[in-house]
Image (cartoon, rainbow, N blue to C red; front, side):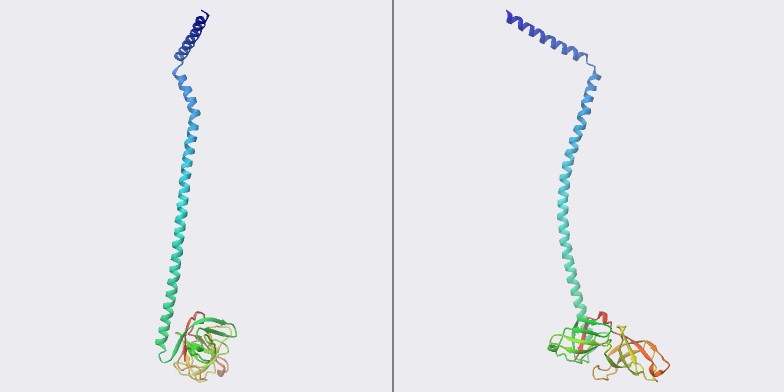
Length: 270
């Protein structure tokens, strides 16, 4: 009897609760529900947006690092291709230089067919105010001897002053210790020329005959006298005539045909 009464009370309580909920729900206005939903939305949407941004950021960074890896590989490939192109360019320049040298040798040979010559490279230059010599890459093994004349495509270079088995030292015509007999090509007037202290491409011509007519632009060549240089090798051009009070002291400046600063290949006349 007591148990049945207790069960009835519980049932009544449950019924009251259910009825209360129904009453509350039935009395809630639509705008109140919207307000609650709006409040929840304001709370949830920023979180949702944050999660979406985080997802996109992670995804974007994955793509970024993937792109960086690809760019690094492509960069290394381009570097390798650049190295290969640079190497090919260097080889091309070497071939071009060798071809130019061979062409110069051929031109020299064709130009000086009257002489028995040996081609050579300039391997060292010793230039100062008091001397101007070069070293070439042939010596006694090739039959080179002291006092043999040395020429280039432009004209006279100098003569051999010392020899080893594989090299030779050449005293150039612009060396102040080098003196030679020369002649004006047109008038055939003779004079003596030697190197100067201050100008590497200039010779000073003295002992000009008093009756000689010498003009700027006149060509000068070897006279064949002196026992070293053959006759008729081009030396240079008169660029200045200096007259003095005493005509016997006048002199001329000769600009050499050879540019000694750029001299690379020569022929030794045997």
